[in-house]
Image (cartoon, rainbow, N blue to C red; front, side):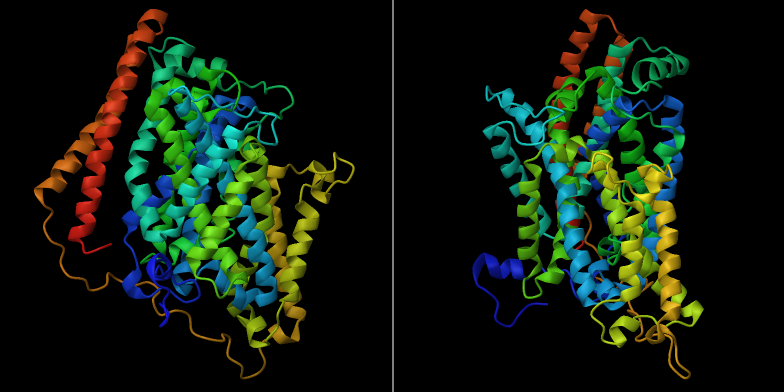
Length: 577
């Protein structure tokens, strides 16, 4: 949708990057499952996995609790995307930020979207901070030495850190402005290689922790050298249910909170929600485990660049940088969509540019990624209640004789039951004790409910409070003869493939590029295995690591040459831009 008076030049081209910000996505713009697989894998095999995986080591998670807790928690997250978020997105074809306007009213939507946009900016800032650590390490190879922030730093500790964050944030914002399709293409090329770099780094660093000749040897090292039952000083030990709930809620705002409606509105069918498994089990399962192994080898500190350099050399540092981008890009994209509701006359690219600027400024503080576990819990708790309200109105209202979109129909600016339900949950659950040194405590804290567990009872509290209050609201109850719904939902729901011209045969150069990429990925797996087989003898290990890092660099260059050729040619023959 472009204006009849388009701006000339670059601004005009950016204005044409229409992403259905305030309207349902049309059938001709729906995408195949491969885009969602690539996007989820790229976003969740992320730079912050280096941080989270190392934090599990520092917080005293046992090997058994970690393996089983992540298995269950990630399954629950996939089911949340598939059965809660994706069906609503496919039925409405709207972003959460525009659909919420019909449910909670334009006034409350402005408040919610502003908070949502700022929190997403903070989350993306953590990704940018992690990528910046990789850039700093890379610059040190060329004699440019910049102080990396320490674990306890809150403010920037050097001018160099500020400059690097500004540059990384600028590049990330440019990619986010390109929109959903470009994000998925970028992630699709990067994600297979990034995942294998995590695997390679873990395999290559295992001999630093001891000889492994069998699965029993590995498990003994895991329990005695990596995931210890004793947490580091000043931290709380993580048990099975802590880990399960963290894996489930670390993306709470995206699945149960429904913000990934912005992504799934492009899906042909709701079952594409299961593609989230590519992100959960490649990223939030295997990558967290691999990052824990690398973190134990480094021994201390949360310097993702140092961990990656030790484990994989230059390719590892590059993986941290690109993993930060592939995660921050869609997060800034979501922030831009959220903030657009309060800048209605701005095109999406301008709002995304604003979100990127805010993100970059927040990213200057290293505390945003040093305290990532607690931040993830808080931002999920704050945003989740509105998702619960929308879930209740979308699915439960028709069964209870209540009117969907009654707030819009009554021309209310604020949905009072939604506001009360949201505030109720925040009063009950928000960890105010963390910001008042324990002088003021939330009811959940007084009841002994840990931060990781609060969101689940909070979701049920939100739904119950909202439904009860709406039953008491005359405007929400269906009157005799009144229809249950205000309008029909988007007619682009569950559809088959749209009519497109048959794709041209792939040219030989595409097959050559694809073959080169596959061989390079195979090399990324074989090379660390050679280091692993070489054992833990210090001299042999150092020699093998040198050869492995050189070979991994060659394989990385080959992969990106081949992968980019394959992607460009495939998209060209399909007639896609």
